Image 1 (cartoon, rainbow, N blue to C red):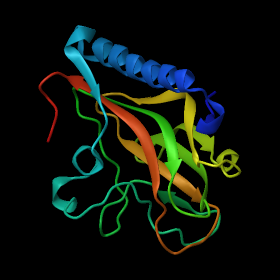
Image 2: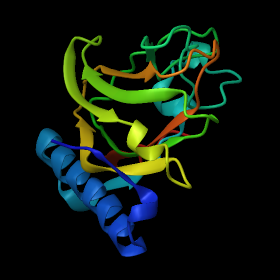
Image 3: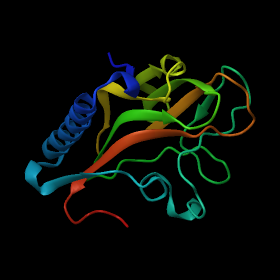
Image 4: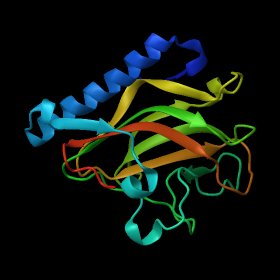
Length: 186
C-alpha cells in the first residue's frame, strides 16, 4: 500500500532518497522490460504537452489541468487537452513513466483523492487521499511507493472533486520518464 507523505514532514535527505528510489525503480523496470543495460537508460522530468498529449491537441496547452470540477464527489480526468477533453495516453514501447509525488496548485484544495488506473480507467492501480495535505503550509507530498506504468500501458489518472468549482484544478504530478539514451523528444 502506498500513501502520500506531506513534503513539509520530510527532511531534505529523505526527499532526495525517495526521488532516487523512484528513478532506480523505473530504470530497473525498463531494463527488464526491453532487455537493456540500465546504464544505457536515463530519467528525465516529463514535459506535459509532449509526453502526455497527442500532437493534434497540444497547441497552447499550459500543463497539468483537470477536467472542470462540476459536482462534489465527481471523478474527473487529471489529463486533459485544451477542449477540454479527457486524455488516456499510452506509454511508448521503449519507456516507463514513474509518478512519485503530487502538488495541488489550485487554491482551496478542490480535490480530495487522486486515482491511477491502467487501461481506459478499467483496472485500478492505486489511489491516494489528498486531504492529508490540506493543513500543511505547502500542499504537496511524496508517494511512499512510486507508481510505475510499463511500456504500452494506457494511463488514466483522475481526481475526485471536494469542491465544485466549474473549472479545472491544477494538480501537478512529479514524475520521471525513463527511456534509452538519445530518444528524448524535444
